[in-house]
Length: 495
Image 1 (cartoon, one colour):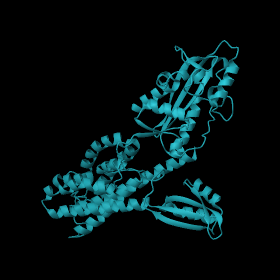
Image 2 (cartoon, helix red, strand yellow):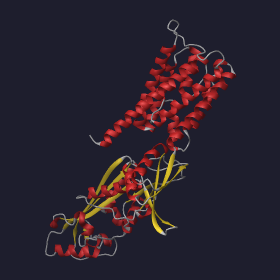
Image 3 (cartoon, one colour):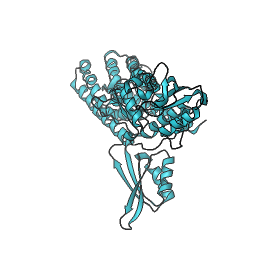
Image 4 (spheres, one colour):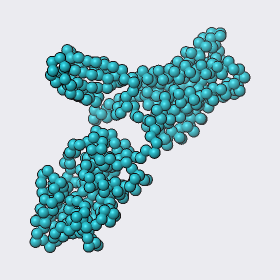
């Protein structure tokens, strides 16, 4: 069993334990402080409370019935991972509401106690109950759970918009709390309901923001490499900047690291163990967006979907952009700041394409597609194959040298059958997908045409009297191996 799997199981266990504790807190607040003083809370629990005040129907019954409807929407929009914990939250809270009512009710009359804090303590019950409700909701959300109802609406909005959960819930709850007037015909109850709403929303945002606070470390140390390695092994990103100590006029390295505030003690311990005499600056940051932190949710008007094509080959890039058209924002490696030569150590086109796409997705974050193409000559047992770009020289991308070597290898051979093959690998948050395109043809005895690149001047596709290099780009794109693979890729994207 891998360490990552064990950590994942442990994290899930902690999540469910915290969700259960949060729901118990919420159920206790509602049952012990709100219902006895006829204070209407927000959300579906508020609707269930109003139904209870009006009809005597226990809150968990109405609460469970309404949440079934909301969960149908959540399954489609938020996915199974959110919904599994939401279903758990709804069922557990329904049970806890029933259990706590059984524990506090009068054993003879089966009625909830009145004035649990004493006579005329409505405001105290309102404050205590609202704080407990808000804290319970916050802990539940931080553990990737939900109590259902308007929490689902808040989570859906928060998924796409940079709007606080407390604000969304408050907006939904205004109508619910206002409607309690038609049960009591007492504006005092409505005022207490709104007080509960504001206090619980403030508590919710306060607890969540405290947990999400981040700090930025600037670490000046001669042992910077050991400190950076230690922080990196703990699962945090590290950047090392070059600087100069102006007094000594010597080069200094500065480690920059952003972590959650609750993790800062761990970082300090690492630093002290390695270099207790280094200089450290730590500061609070307003917001942190990126991998491991929050996601940028600002809306961009008319934004095309950005896809990175893992190449810096201008010919390939131009060809792909022309085939895909103006629907997508196609970026090259250099467009996203990747100017390194990504290793291609696979033994097949598919392995190489996946290797490149995974590299970009891992280190740059963008959804990426990569291709690996090659010429397979039957008389050469499939060579040059995956080595097509480096057939003549190890440095590669010398088309003239590659063509000359291929003609030399085929000299005197009657069988000149060959095929061009492309595999496009697409890596996104939804997994890996591969698309293959192939064109059969033959290798002619001398180069013809000035268009295209690579082996195009030597490759004559079956059924045509022109090489790829003699065709214009539109004609080639319609029949090329890359064009056929891209056609399958575009069909997949559009679906």
